[in-house]
Every structure is written in C-alpha cells, then in structure tokens.
Image 1 (cartoon, helix red, strand yellow):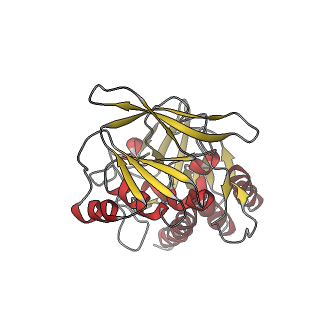
Image 2: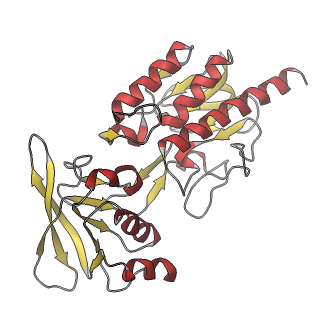
Length: 312
C-alpha cells in the first residue's frame, strides 16, 4: 500500500499537519516516534497556547491534538523511523522491519534540548528545571533563577527572565562569554543579572514534594576550587538544541547546526513532495504555536503537490 501522506514525528507540527491532511481526505499515516508529543510531553503547565485561558498540562494538550487528528482519519503508529529513501517515487520509510511507501512525506521530528547531565536535572524537569525561558519564565515571577550557558541563547534567556524573576544568575564554565558582543553587553549591563564565572552545574537540589520543586544547585569550580551551593528556585539550561534531522541528512539540506532547510515562506525542501515543519526547521522561535502553524502549511502544500501530480 502506498500512502498519500506519511508524517514522520508528532508534536504540535505533526499533529496539526495530520488534522489538515486528514480533513483533505488524504488519510495520513503518522509515525509518531517513541514519545509522541515531543518536548511538550515533559512540560507541566502550558499557559501561552491560544484557547486555554486557564492553561493546560503539556501531555494533556498533546493528547487532545492526537484525538483530533485521529477523529478525522489519521492513523497514528508509535514507531520510530530509522531509515528513509527520499529519491524516486514512491518515497520509502522504514521503522525497523516495517516498511512504508509514501507519495509525499512531512518531516516533523522536532528538536531536543541539550542538557548538562547534572544530577537532579531530569528529576526536576518541569518542576523548576526548564530549557525554555519564553515558555516557562512566567512561572518564576519574583523568584531567583539561574541560566546555564554562555552563548547568545543563554544571554537572551537571561535578559528575558529579568521581566519576571527577582534576580538571574548566569552560570558559565569559563571566564569569558561566547555570545556576540551586543548580547554580552545587554546581560553584563543589566542590574538584575549577575555572573558565576568558572562554574559548572554539578547538581540541582530540591524537595520531592508534593509539590516537587527546586531549592538550589551545587556548582563545581572549574579552576579547582571548592564546590559552591547557591539557593535558587529555577534553573534554565541554555546550551543549545539538537534538531532531530540525522535520518534525513543523506537527502535533505541542513544549516550549520543541523536544522533542515526549507524554501523561505514555505515548508518545501529541495525534494518535491518532501516537506519539513516545526522545530526541526526552526532555530529561532521554537514555540508550540509557531510549530503548529508550519504544520498547517506543510499539509496544505502536500495536498497541492498531490493534486498537481494527479492532474499532470
């Protein structure tokens, strides 16, 4: 059987693409991966997605996305794609021994935040540890927080967090920043930002609850001095994201960081019939609502591509 549309990955982009493709009677097949829903599955309260004035839990939001996609005829399989052939027609997709054929493919595999590996980082994820200040900064109004990192992302997160937090400590393992000069200066000049130089996150500490919450962190002195304990209520890890694009790089173009390249203003890749949306293409915004928007675009473009094929 050859499917009209195979969606690889899930999350807001993939599920939105599935809703639109299913409503166009394309009966999409979604290969959702081992953790359907993407990064929102490790997010507690989502308060910035339109339509939920009281907020909603990330996993609950993704469950609603999936139900809506399935209601219109999407088949969701919790399988992980480990190989593709994106040349010739139809396109070929493998999940282990399972083999699928597709007239069009939508890639929505997202990106994964890079973590330090410090003790407690995973345990307190969504309970005081975050990788997105724009998503979660609101929950730390009047609190003391820390940002881990020394690049542009870390400086942007730190400056943004000053809108909510009482104070922001930037923890950097060196004594100089990697960020651009203008971003460095904004952070260095800000009265609510201080720097813990030559320090690395060793452990996030807190209470098991309920509710579970962060109360501090232990910092290692990278110059050989004694460890330091810092009282803190939130930790934002800002050492970058890794787009989940590795399976596709033999066929699709990426930028220097591994994000899939699409035509400006579209979700089209260099291969006709292959589209990419969501965080696997987005190194700037990385929001659920922007990902959903590009998922809509991908489905509409796939529909138009297939229609053109059928009338060629």
